[in-house]
Image (cartoon, rainbow, N blue to C red; front, side, top):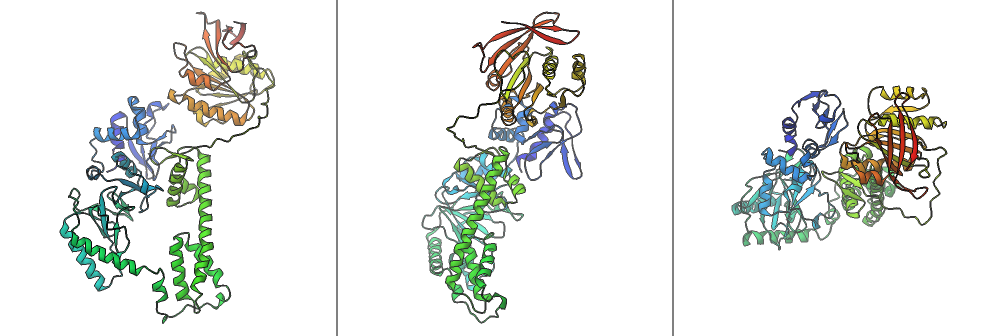
Length: 622
């Protein structure tokens, strides 16, 4: 069971109108963000295929199960993924990965392994320990396989029996005798995905990590090694414990000595990597190809270049020696094959270097929330390569690992010892605030008003004064209806004198280059994200230039919702207050001026409002 299996049960308990349905084979359910939907529509959220990400087609919500909990339970908005996972397990009594409790008792260190594979995804995994159950749950929830680090770190040695063909009767007899002795030990045992088994014994330093001892398809996993473990899956086949909870036994001297003797056979057998090729009988038919005459080396180099994309250089060299021996009537000198592999190995290094650059560039462009699957889909790069370089970038400080296999680019500071070109000043006046400072391309002005203070009327008064200067501004509104059109007509602004568009998501706004833009009004639902929103707008203005005026709502008290963030980014920040009950007088409270023209950084601008014409004019500056 995965914790995500509890998602719908959780949503149903928190959303009274929760529904789940399907459309064209796609599972749809009520969005966790339904409280913020303008209209309560039919189920509009789904799980992105191959991930644990929830995505709503209606409001654009994108997040994990943990994000849904933070959204639906505000008291948990600061909980980590780990704490939320524990909360779900405790609350819903999820019998999730029950084997992990036993792994904790054994005090094993686990390692994340690529999905449907056997290779760890952390580059320096032999130097890293993971003893915490919450880490293991995260990996399993992300579809990764899990390995147990063998050796002293987990206090275990594993004798790994593979179920592979190709053994002689004598070898099968020796292998079966050893297996029966291990069975009699009654130690911990796990069945592997393809019919083999793991015998787990207490750490025995004499049994060094070795593969295929005596050619019997038996491996020793010890210091520097790992074995896949339940709930790992390879080729749809599961790893399953036979007797989890059993005592891990000490290997008997009899069995240990037998294994050590078999390991000596392995040493002598592997003294020469290509001995079996050199001694192989040549009394076999050759595949002749006279067209290879004079260009065998080129042909074999091309073949090696194709093989090395899927095999290691050593494995490729082995295959090329076999092909040379069996496919050519007049085989090349074995030294020629070895020499050829030098250029092929360099080719593989070059290809991997190119893949590394592509992945880093993709990460840089996307900036945030990048997964290995995103890289696979966009760059057509194998999962193992994507995982390898994402881990490398984290270690090198080029990326930050977010929760649940998501990554963020860490940008290197580009230092410069030259003064920048002086920013170009704008060639029109800023309504109401022109005398306070000089304004430059890229400046942001933030204006606030309490509910009902007339933010739209103020926005259109500013827009009118810009239009009168023969500038065609851009007006972005976030409230539906035709109220702003009526006020614009009342103010005498003609159709065609300004651009306008509805937009509700501030993080998807694209500012036009060198434009005067009014955003009426900016609503940041989670106030703690105010700095993130303004960072986006600042970066957008840095790229595009022009002037951006952002209207924001104040608290009933007249204070900013996020005063530090609001006043950190803009060139000017001001709040509008209504003074009289008849609403005919008011004033601007200037809170911030980045570069005050007369050295005055806090001031008040008195205003008058004509209810008939909707025009706001200024009186005195105090």
